[in-house]
Length: 85
Image (cartoon, rainbow, N blue to C red; front, side, top):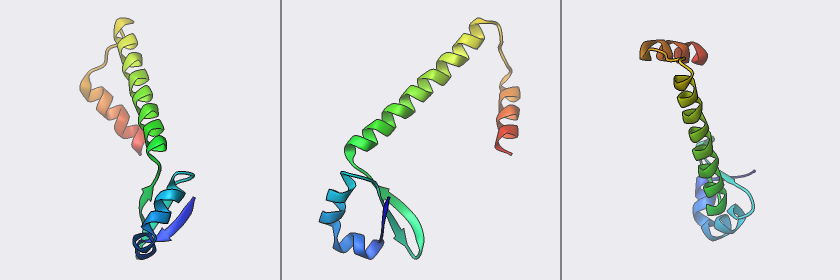
């Protein structure tokens, strides 16, 4: 991934758009990464992957309910919090 500072990205915006068609470009401001510019095609792939993951997770939950493995909402939240730690 290429990196540009914000002022260079502003000045070279046309080139930035062309480069983003081939690989994501990270934009830094004050030494910190604040954005990533990527092609519309790559964004579409990411959205599709996200949707597939969510559909899979929902189906898994439905399968568990059908199998009688229901959980209380509080138990689910507790397990999620433990996974985050």
